Length: 275
Image 1 (cartoon, rainbow, N blue to C red):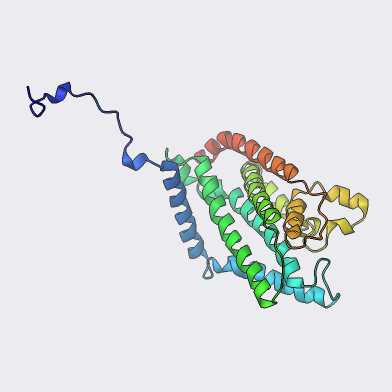
Image 2: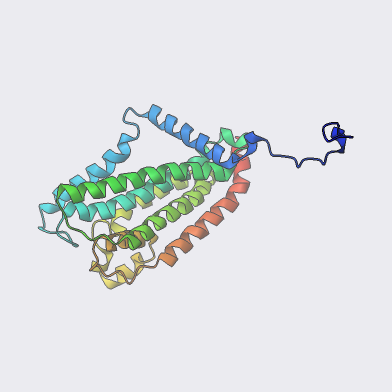
């Protein structure tokens, strides 16, 4: 029997292949959730994503004008906008990312009933979208201030990158943990909002916490957001002493809250679906 006349049943069986529609399923689901978030956000407001740029710019401008009336120079450097951009925008990145992740389960509650959509997909979709939007805002504002005021700043990338990593880790960690508490205890959401309001002062955005009395500084040291703000500023002000900053402490808080939140969500999500 020739090779062309061979019986097909005699050929070795082929290894089963995964259907093309199931390849990269997690990535496809996350991208679909991101596109859903983009469309939903644009439909809720006429400004859409422009508000992500307007809010930090307006805050920096108002604070720069207000504090310039009382003092000639900021605590670090000589330029008020750069001082507040390096403090307000990282703080804004953290709060916005954590806030969006906190509401991700409720926002995508109906989609969690589909087998292809997991809790991690929902969390990472909102995290990636909001983190990278705010990252773009940060880069644009920093370069905008440097060009507008013709500042000669030797930016050290290492502390800037570490600070951005801390922002992302803490944002998804605190956001995941809060998503559980927001579902279990609705009153906690209002309590968290009240506690978050003075966080800008307690995180060293307006004034450096090192300038406060020692007893108060040692209390505020436990605030992980103060560490990422100081680490960010050290990249733009090389003379700024940040020996007290501990990235390990921030990443530990982020990892702990993320794991606790993720474990708790496996139980809470079924209660959400039954509502």
